[in-house]
Length: 111
Length: 113
Image (cartoon, rainbow over all chains, first blue to last red; front, top):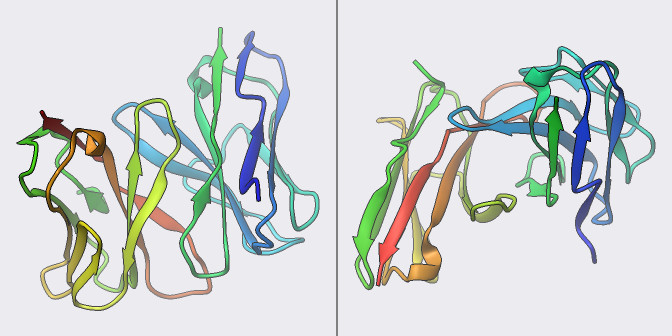
C-alpha cells in the first residue's frame, strides 16, 4: 500500500507558466483534498472532491482548477502561475467522514 | 478570531516530562477533532481523533475534549526528543455532508534531552 502519492516532489515555475500536480491514492477512499501550507497560515483547503464526479471549492480556490479523474486520482492545475502560489501543496484522502491521510507534498516555487 | 486557534510555541519540555498542547475552536457545532504531527519538511501524520467529551488514550498520547468550553488538548507522556515536531489541531465543522477540516496553525514542540 503506497497510501497517497504526489508528483512532482519539487517544481520551479516562471510567472505565467502552467502546470498540473498529480495525486493518487490506493486506499479506496471516496474523498480527496488539495491543501496549501504557508508559514504562519497553516493548512488551507483549496479544493476537495467528496466523491468521484464531484468537486467543490475550499477556502482559497482562486487561481486553481481541479479534476477528479477517477476514484484514485485527483489533480490540481495552475493555469497561470503567480509568485503568491509559491507554497507546499498537500493532497489528502479519506473515507467519507473520517480522518484524512496526507501525501508527501509538492514544494512549488514561482519566480 | 481564527476558527481554530493554537499557541504557536515553541513549547519546550525536558525529556520524560508531560507535554500539554491546547487548541480552541469557535464553531460550537463542531463534531470531530483530530491531532496531526508534522516533522519539519514532512507531511502531516494522524496521531489521534476524538469525537466525544472526555479523554481518549493511545499509548503515550491522550486527547481530551471539552465541548462546553470548546477546547481540545493533547497530552504526551514521557516526552522523547523524537516527539519534537509541530502538532496540528484540526476540527470538522458540524452540519452538512462534508468532511472539510479546519486546521490550526500548529504548536511547535521541542523536547530537550
